[in-house]
Image 1 (spheres, helix red, strand yellow):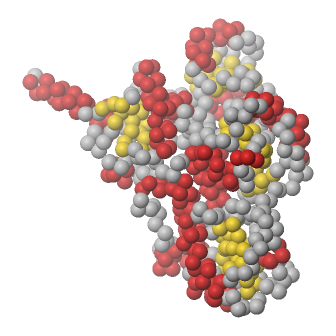
Image 2: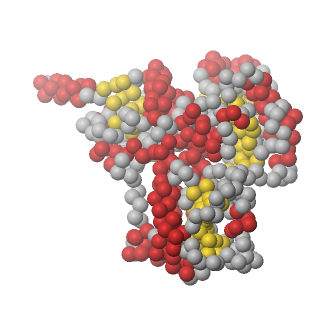
Image 3: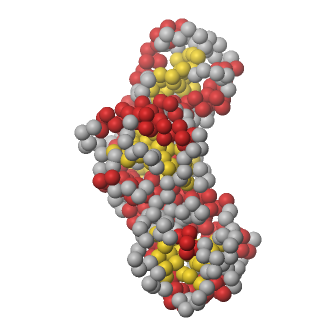
Length: 552
């Protein structure tokens, strides 16, 4: 008896070591195993105290933990200070902050990465989908009311026969969507409460028209399309919280309105924008960006805009090729926006290409300065072999390359048929070349065929010289699928990192991700085996920087 009592006391003492902060369990290496035993289904955030994203996440994470606790749920939210618990961070391959992983049934061998949004509701919905049925069964009107009132968006299937083919199609769709709760009912009371008279699927939401009823053949694919088209507001503000939904959605054509919230006509312009969006639902995503916010200045820069030029509208496609469009009429009215979007959907718009003015001294130095307005004339000069660096002023790799590129210009400044040039691709765009990452190096050989050769060799003075002396053959490469991924990574991190105060860290991460993919592809293509000596040499850039602040 004494041993049993002693064991119980010891067990309680161990459990007591798992502290809480705002209903979130505080885990360390010393209590991690015990936490998994006591709470088999647990979501764990690995964070850094200095990380801006972690600080922004904290209130919603705590709110979710509190709601689950109030419900009496067995689901728990926890956090680990990865800067203090480095062993745990290493064990679970934490490479950035915050990293959120789900441990199911106490198993730590293969935790699942969290993949939904960063609102309290997103965490709760995702966890319930992972641990319970894809749909909740509603037997009473009061339960339906509670679910609708407690959710930003919820989908309810009204079926007299919950085993019907249409009902099962809804269940299949529910299993594919993590961030929206689904329910199903055959209750006459629920049908009556929401004035549903026949089998239907209804999406309830706390914005815009309030509810949408599905029409058409009830297949999984059609139901998924219905939910994705209606789960976001007609106009969504771009923030750190909404970024995953914006970029994670299937709509890749986005129209952005840059407008200061403090403007006296803010609401009027927002209403005009919103009214226009109704005609392009499911085709174009309408996004509002507060142009006064310091967090958004990088985005304005990306589109070549300044605060004083707002309000302004731009349209961008995020397909394999990223393309920007600018309206002819900048006045923000419903008719103007609709006309602009209609021309886009009909393929009648020409891309908007930014260009700086041509500097007076653009050709005075060994490295010539190109802008959009003089690029064609210089790069496609039939008598010249032109080697161009497309760079970004903030890019760390570009800064490292700059002195080497200057030396290359000096080395070939007397060559009559060779031109070494550079172009700031954050301020200048050209239709003939799509710059997917920085720095991008391209060679334009002499001739009338307007040929473009990608340089994929070593970034050394010797390698560049050999490339030019070989006529653009040694070190040349071709565009491939990896380039598309580099493009996607840059777009995503450019926008998603806009809210970081540490912009240099954010962009270092952009460069790092793209560079790792670039080096991996180079290594494999150059040798067929990434472990070969030549391939190994390509991996000179560390997978993670020594200063972990760069991984935020």
